[in-house]
Length: 453
Image 1: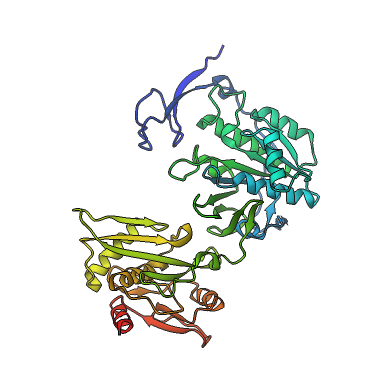
Image 2 (image 1 turned 180 degrees about the vertical axis):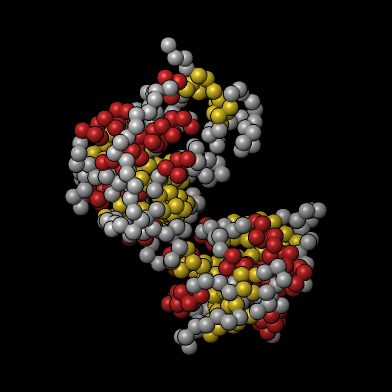
C-alpha cells in the first residue's frame, strides 16, 4: 500500500518544505508554514497518452469570441465589452466592500435576460442570500441558489444541468475537495478547487465568477497560481468611509488592463457612476491653496481627480511623510527634486498628500500635479483657476511628455476647465483651452510669483 506523505506548505507563496520552520525561505514570511498531507497514490498513477493531440497553424482561421452584455455598462467596460463564454473571472476585495452585492445584482439582471444563472455560496445560507435579495429588490429574480462547500458535490450537481450559462462561487477559500485532508482555505485546497472550477468552465463553456479573499496587504489570498489559472482578475477597491467603489482589471485575456468601473453604494445596492470625474472633484478645488486637479488616464478612460498637499512645521527629528492614494517613494523623489532643482527645502517640514475620494493613482503623469499642490501649500497661493495639470518630472527637474494628452484635455474641457499646465510641446487644437507649457520645474516659480501679485 502507498503511504501518505506529510509536508509543510507556505500559505503565502505555496512553496513546499520537508520540515517546519518559523520562516519561509522562499518568500520571507513568518509563521506561514502549515502541515498538509499529500496523497501519494494519486501522484504515482502513470498518465495515459492522449493520441488525439495535434498541432494547429497560427495563420489558420479563428472563431471570434462572442460577448454577452451584462446590462451594467461599468462592468462591461472593465471586462472589455462583456462576458465571454467559458471564461473564469476572479474578483477580490476587502470584506464588506460589496463583492457579493455586485454579483447578486449581476446574476439577477442576467437571469432577467433569459440566462440560466446559479449562485453558490460557501459563506452564507440560502436564507441569508434571499434576505439580501429582498433588501435589494431582487427577490423575484429566477436565480438558482446553493449553499455548499464540497467542490466535488457542487461539480456533480452542476454537471447534471446542461443549461447553466453562468456560475458564481462565493468564495474559493471556503471550498474543499475530498481528495485532500487539509483544511479549506489552505494552498492545496484552493489550488485543487480552482482547478476543478476552471476545467468545468472550459469544458462546458460556462462563465464562472469566483470570489477571492484578500490579505491585509490587499493582495488576493492563496497561491499566486490562482491568478494565473483564471482569465480575468478584478479588484474591488474602496474605502469604508466613502460611498463609492472602484472595480479595476489587473489581468484580462479578453480585453485591456487597468480599466476601472465606478459604482456608488446606496441602500438598494450598487449604482453605476457614468462620469466619475464629477464625483472626485469638489466645488472648492479651484480656490484653495495646496490643491491641484490632475487629469489622469485609467485604462482608456480619462479621470479628473483633486490632489491635496499640506506642508506643516515638524517638531520631531524625522518629519512625517504621509500619503493616501499615491506611492510614498514617488513622493520622496518629488520632494528631493523640489529641494535640489527648485530650492524648496522640506527637510524640517511634515508633508501630507491626499488623493481626494480614495482613488489610487499609479501614473507618473501625476508628478507635476503633486509638485504644484506642494508648492501651492508652501506659498499659500491657490493655483490658477479652472486649470488642470499633468506631466512627469525627471530627476534633473525637466517636465516630460505623457501619453493621451489630447484625451485628458478634452475631458477637462468637457467639465468646464479652461486652462492647463502641461509639458512643453503638448498640442491641442481647441482654442477654448489655454495651455501653459513648461519644460522645467523652475518655471513654476514664475507662475506662483505672478499669482501672489
